[in-house]
Image 1 (cartoon, rainbow, N blue to C red):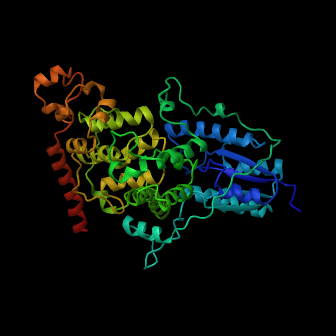
Image 2 (cartoon, rainbow, N blue to C red; image 1 turned 180 degrees about the horizontal axis):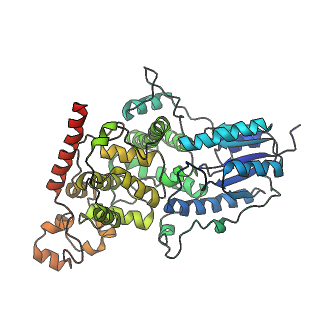
Image 3 (cartoon, rainbow, N blue to C red; image 1 turned 30 degrees about the vertical axis):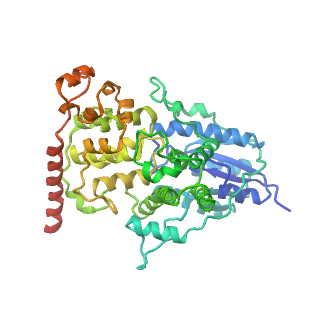
Length: 485
């Protein structure tokens, strides 16, 4: 006979009821299941969420609370040190066990390890599960027994190794706890005075149901052209839009994998596009391998040679980049999209990151921090790994001599010009031939388009060739110092 003592499920970045290993395992015990979320904003070492992430978190917790309430339960909300909060709830609720899904950052692992040890000493079962990744960072190894440092062989190994487990249903019922909970609004996660996120609801609907709707909508058509369209920021359906849902665990990667593979098997999607999409999911997996084995990935160069990089301390230039006032339309469009929506198209992320680290020679850590604060999908592994990839300091990094040309990148990927025109409306009347380099546009064309450089739109911060040459010279410094050491 099952115990009458409850099982406490501690939600973290797995804000869903379906396909949630910790929640499913708790439900399978036959004991009452109580749900908890802790806002760990005072824990030493844990990286605190940025502003855009907190907006998403508020909305996602509201959606999760509603789903739990529909099953007869209530989500306990507490703020503070997780170990102290769990100790208090153990005394109040007398659970037989506490279940959670694992995290992979060093500080989170340290917190969880200590909590698990303390619970076991107190006679409380503590069980953790994999609810965030296809393959945990210690699973796949190279022939020499180490972790993968290059993406392509990692992706080949993952593709050959991984088989999605059977889907896990959401529990039919959850337990209503007789315990005090914080009010979500009391946490003040939503911005005000000013409400800089006022446009976010036009683009996003956080929550598990919305995540599944996005996945199904993507598989109903857009994925068919994904291989060719994924670099097109001017197309609204060029990407799945699942990244923030995946970051917060409103959908798990196994759910995505199963759905895509099913669509492939039935012939509903083209295999080249489907595998390309799954390879992007695998980049997230690879990023977690790097983070797990390199805990300082968001702050320290993966390639230690880059400690010799002669970065510039240029606050005014950094501020212009943040505001989308660089004078390069595709860069500015990306930075403005980021501010307005909490998201940026992946191709444009690469272009804007390259401009900051190469044209402006500003440390990649500054860009990573800005994205961390302004992205609703600010992932601790992918954000850091991707910034280091662009800067050239990361694992499997882009060659140092690859300096994206923001003019030709715009011409090649914003084919219609709709992306720049949407986010830089002051340039809307420029013809495509001049849209990506307004400073090279004849005066009469500028006048007809209502563009006055230096007034309605800025002059470029640095000429492309000069910026590229300066970047190459800086990278030569790294190379020279490496050879000398």
